[in-house]
Image (cartoon, rainbow, N blue to C red):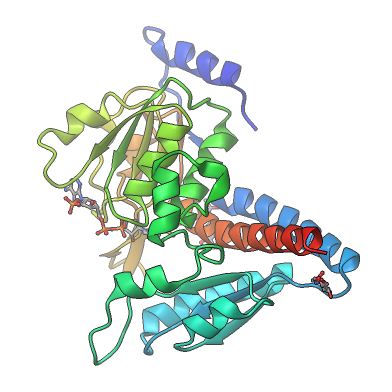
Length: 311
Ligand SMILES: NC(=O)c1ccc[n+]([C@@H]2O[C@H](COP(=O)([O-])OP(=O)(O)OC[C@H]3O[C@@H](n4cnc5c(N)ncnc54)[C@H](OP(=O)(O)O)[C@@H]3O)[C@@H](O)[C@H]2O)c1
Ligand SMILES: *[C@@H]1O[C@H](CO)[C@@H](O)[C@H](O)[C@H]1NC(C)=O
Ligand SMILES: *[C@@H]1O[C@H](CO)[C@@H](O)[C@H](O)[C@H]1NC(C)=O
């Protein structure tokens, strides 16, 4: 972990006249997510020995059969199997899962794929808030927006971003944070998390007139816009912490697949100016899955505590 002292040294060094500009420290989601998964595995092992055979359980509910959803689900199931969560893949059964005491987490894979239009909002909100490990129900979103951080489930992508910011050692309190995007799964909860970790937060969106100017004020920048390489290095404040949630497929003739994945930040210019930066891939992506596992284990822990206090 890098300390704040290390950051201020970097800043001074890069501010020196004529000195070579330093390259941003890479914040590795690959490594950080492994730390999280290893910690969870230990905790799950302990639960299992203390409460003979107990396993945190996550259900992924899929409607339809979209190929891209199938890929996400198999990644999540694999991560769950590795740390000992018993993940079941069920279709259309929120109510029975809500009532099943052996299930601690329930997520509905979006988008819903069905011939009949299904109200995604209604589906998300029918998940029991105590099992809503995606943090998307209005109960959990409301608690987060009001700052009740210890009493809710926080959506996995912004929660992973916070974990990566923590890894830099840069404190959030009192900093100016800028979020690009205001979606329910990324931008809006990211705004709330930064705010209640005591940053002063500006949230930008497609109607924000001068994005580069706003970005230039950010000590901490989180981008979730879905626009390939939109944020340019010369927009950034020197030494900023840059967290890139973007996953964009662009064509690349040099690759066998004919395409490659880039973020919402133009990496090769941004890493010349940022203090810390997340790569794509290997940044926010792996953290999202790790935080889903964390929320599931947290839910299981709460369940065990509640069960014990009822005896
Ligand atoms: N790593 C992960 O696990 C993970 C998870 C989820 C999402 N993602 C990625 O994160 C990105 C965002 O996802 P999302 O679901 O939040 O997308 P989304 O629902 O499409 O929301 C995009 C947000 O960005 C804003 N925006 C779009 N173009 C903009 C522009 N030119 N300038 C300023 N703001 C702009 C939109 O503004 P308006 O509100 O005005 O339309 C909207 O609020 C995508 O690349 C997605 O693939 C990654
Ligand atoms: C992270 O891991 C992925 C998948 O194994 C790999 O494609 C990527 O290059 C890694 N990224 C970094 C920065 O280590
Ligand atoms: C929950 O409590 C009941 C008794 O009230 C007990 O039979 C059961 O084994 C407990 N479950 C776990 C997982 O500890």
